[in-house]
Length: 145
Image (tube, rainbow, N blue to C red):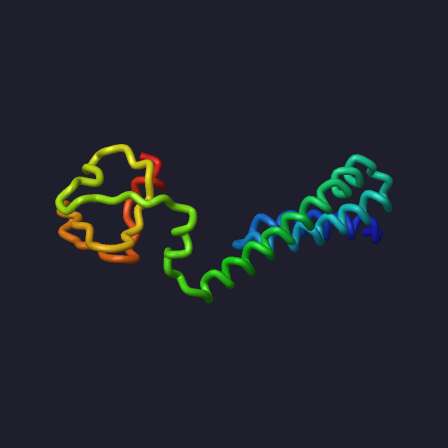
């Protein structure tokens, strides 16, 4: 086996390895390694379609790896801070309800997320009371049904 063939087998093994990755970070890292291996193989063997493909894929994999790294850093930072939903208040508009007034009914189309700023909200279907700082309506808003 020549060195060029060995590089080709290594590149192929790295692509196979990407299918075994359980996280996007490791997948992108291995994909970048396979891009470098295939670029070397394509250059050495004169396989220009392989070379061009991996020259195009390399920056894409690098960009997606950087984006994923930034996203994970932001998620870790958010998890380390106050998880109170009150930060959303500036992006919401107030809606006042009278005591006993129905906000929405079971089965009604959900199109809003609510946060209790003051007072209490009773959810009789599940025998629960919500107070200031509690969110509701999110399940119906984000569910597909």
